[in-house]
Amino acid sequence: MSANAKPSENIEALPSSLNKPRQQGTIKPGMDRRIEKQRFSRKTFISLIVGFTVFIAGYYFVDNLTTERSVKVSGDRLNISRVMQGTFEDFIPLRAQVAPLKTVFLDAVQGGRIEEILLEDGATVEANQIVLRLSNSDLQLSVMSTESRVIEQLNAMRTQELKLEQNRMRHKHTLVDLDYNIRRLTRESKRRKELIKKSLISQSEYDGFVDELNYTRKKREVTLEGQASDEKLMAAQLKFFREKTVSMEENLTFARASLDDLIVRSPVAGRLSGFDMEIGQNVTRGLRIGQVSNPTTFKLLAQIDEYYLGRVDLDQEASFERNGKHYTLRVTKIYPDVKNGQFQIDLKMIGNQPTNLRRGQTLQSKLILGDSDKALLIPNGQFFQDTGGKWVFVVNSTGAEASKRQIRLGRRNNRFIEVLSGLESGENVITSSYGSFKEMDKLILEKE
View 1 (cartoon, helix red, strand yellow):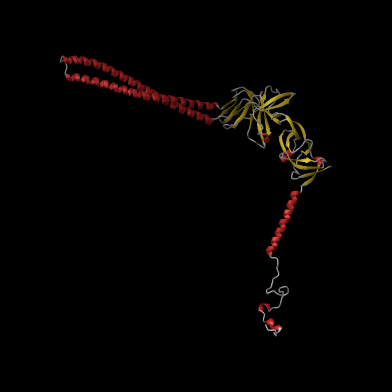
View 2: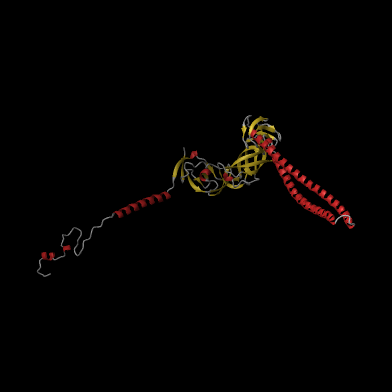
């Protein structure tokens, strides 16, 4: 560019991109391109919103973790108990029911219609005494038919045995005849032999006697072989028939005994109970008619919480008191089935037993699980069902607050629970139900 050039001409010589009017804030002196103004994109805006939301949620989460949940409750409505040293008696209180020691059930072996009832419910019965009589026409006809078939088969077998015996006798008669003929022909052949020496008979006549004698001897040998074979076969058949006869006679006896089952008898002596039958009633086969039990010997049936299932064993001792006397029991049976959170045990009385017990009567007793020893104790309460014994609300020294504390408990009975760790003697704990505030960390105890 020359020194004499005009300013307007210099501007026109610039590139077309710089010849445009300057926009505010886009071109500065000494720069050769335009810089656009930066703005927030939609993606950046959404990221900021998400980050802010996460920050607020994290803040409140941390705040909740560091903040104790508390609630105000009336201290007068709670059971507050003191932790103390004492003697723990390891037993379970039992509410046991009196039951007969031995019970025999009466079931209908055969079904039928009740024709006669000879005893009433609660009556004392003797062994083999008739309780009731049934009738069953179908069973009677079936037994008669079976009896008829058995008798026919027995007669058929006896007929066969008779035939075998007759065959054996025929063989004997045949041998007798053959022996007679052999002796006769032997004597005759000797005489004929002397006659032929004197030429009184012909040779052919003599040879005929000799041939007949040999034939008779061979026939006897064959007869003996046949007799031995028949004897062996007959012995096997007779053995089979006799065994079959015994089996058929047993079947006949069983068929006749089924008719006797229509008469229901008491198998043992005792007292009849659970017997509610009416004349004309139809009884199905196997129906429970009643039961007979000894009215003087009893046992106790008790339901125990499944918590103690692993601690109850056979031969453990139990006891109860009645009319000022102490009686001893022993566990004789543990039923493995758990129903409604409980299992059942049988307790047998050892030694003397009360004379005025009645079936179905309830007795308060206790089952001893272990020896008594010194331990740190808290009273048993509803809190155990709410916490499982894992934690408890401990009241502070002022009695104004109670805080949740993790503890470890051991054995328990109906009065006390053994404390293994987490509590000290002299502290106060809430032992009533935690149902309405067990999610809290602290309780503010108010006075009414």
